[in-house]
Length: 535
Image (cartoon, rainbow, N blue to C red; front, side, top):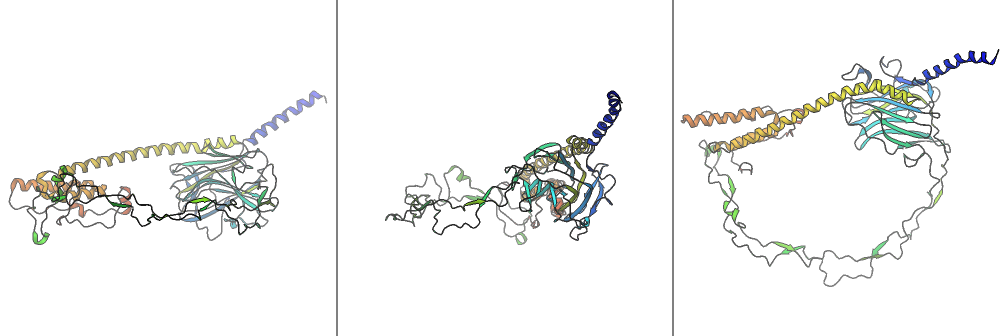
């Protein structure tokens, strides 16, 4: 056969091979969409401590299914064994998954563990916190912890021990209830990139001591653990001057302040005038009963005579700084003649040191979720392992982006509604401001204290604003009725605020109320000192 004939025969084979390679490159190594459920494919841990129930549920507002954490304050563990292990040593590997914290995340994890091959005979039902993994990746939030973990467990070739290496600068967890996609891209040049929603948030080098703690490659030397600091080693750079003597005129007991003997009472000071006086415009209410209500006392106001004078009442000489005050005497500090510096043990060769061109990753044989969380509603979806960044991006755009856009629009609508609610709160403030002015109307003077009590309750419980308006209206009608028709006053107005059922703790929180449990009964018959706002 001629050379040309062989070329004609090989051409179709080459085309088919290239097409097959292209199709192969477009497929992920692993993709779990949870469209068909997880029973029979994923194995729930049989350990007693993992009592949390996994469910196959739709994401809120979508037709897309995921793996749901259904109960709060539980431990969860579930694992999926791969058909064949995924190697991380050659080429690019992309780890990606979606998480939606539908009820938020105050304390708990939502990360994945990429499990290394286990010993022969291992049962997936034994999966727990101690199951060895290669990489742990994903969000974790509790207390001061708020990070997207990336942890590599790497075997030290010198000792055979596995060491956890944590990414030093991980991204923070998005603080909302939207769907988010987390991506870790491991490159053959030792680079790892962490993306959230397709946007790069962190980049590191596996072999850099600045990027991982502890560093993958140990230091060449370590402090000698057997080296001890000599007993006569003096680390004090400064010491009190042993030759110094306290001066004879140093008075340690002198006060910091003394009376200003040079001060004189200002001219025009009103010694015999009190700072407060009875309100001359106040009058004893007509319905005041001395036997039931006690002796009536006029409310106090600031003494108007004191406003133009430099002061009222007994004048007292002011205090001034004591020029003789020196405080506790201390010997001055001098350089320590015996100072030897801060002691450090001597360095010795590190027996665990090794050199490395690239990490010796263990393969990924399974994917597990092993978490403890105080929140329910955590939904996992579209767990992916790929050897092509474009594949991961394409799946992100197809599965996550449409859901996120819908959720984002819904969030904007809720924020707009919340802004409207704040406007209503401002409206309520205006209502209370008008009511305070009404309380200052002269012919309502006998009821002023009662009205102010009602308004103050309304400020603490904004959800009863309508009741407040009704209560003030009752008082106004009653007073007008008496003013117009005179005679015996009608039945005393009811106190609807006191009768309004106190909101529950949840309602109080929603309304911005402190929800005080100890609320004093409304007793408008007992005289009290007016506040500045009342005057």
